[in-house]
Image (cartoon, rainbow over all chains, first blue to last red; front, top):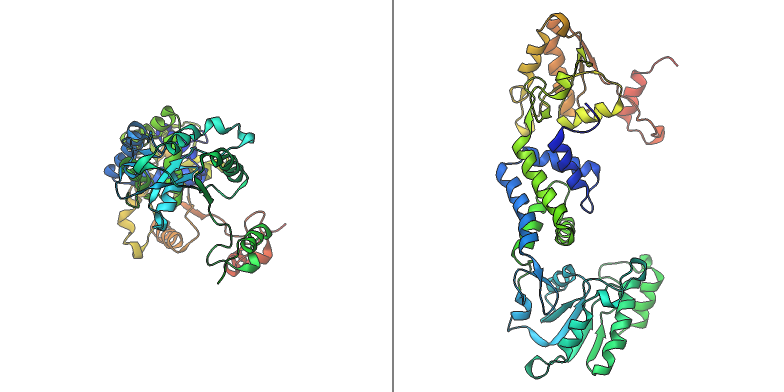
Length: 203
Length: 203
């Protein structure tokens, strides 16, 4: 016996080992869990993987992932069509939905400008955003919220977009930077604390 | 839009969320990874899951997982058939193989005695072990190494087995307890340190 499992088990461990956040030990643990799990649970997982590849596509309007385009958010008549929240990834849409504070539409760029990873403006869904801002009537956009990650790539993308969109005359806003709720002033890094100071509001 | 993803994505996140060591955030990260991964990689993962359920079985001799029984270890003519190493799980076989210190056979119990989880001796593959000890000639077993986990369940199982096997006259050994290599005496718990003292050897 070599230092690997018999055929199928090793292939399963290897396949799981490629996934983000799963190391060799975790992959082994999952493989043995699947081995002893009910047939149904294993089949469900395998089918879910194949289903997601077969069914999921991007919304032609907002770029979010969905099963049919336009996506449920773009189709929802109760959403406020005058506000578009621009995010990097589909999971950011879910994060904002969870706040239950936002009732507008979204635009998913599919990433952020990152010269180190060779991602430029043309690799992001920016053209579609411009096109959406040109619509008039009931669908007229009055505000674009740039909800990008507060890191170098997100900041660069936000600067690029706000320069690009300024001529359109639409109101452009950014998420507030500051101390996370429940955090401790003592442990805040100086940049965050600086932003919190600069963005101070009347109590 | 409810606070869940569109159909197939949510099903994939849920399916991954059931696996050991994967939380909701990790499941979401993996689902989006699969969504953007090449078709081939996703199919490989789905097929590996189904293949492991279809192909993998237990060796009738040693109880280890394998694609055909007897398993490659039991069939290997270079292995020393006079020593059987008793372990709890198939992954323990791999851990011992990795040491490259052991050339005997294995016996996988499929767990340890654990009254809290309703696992008694009859739930483990102990009858098969007894039967293997009764063979004579070239296959005669001279030593049984109890390589069980150094926790309450493992210790209970080891005590039970050593009482059960003593009448057979075969030599019964246990793995040494002591300080892990590379560890620090200062941080060793008192039970481990006690065992290391009790098991001290001449330098």
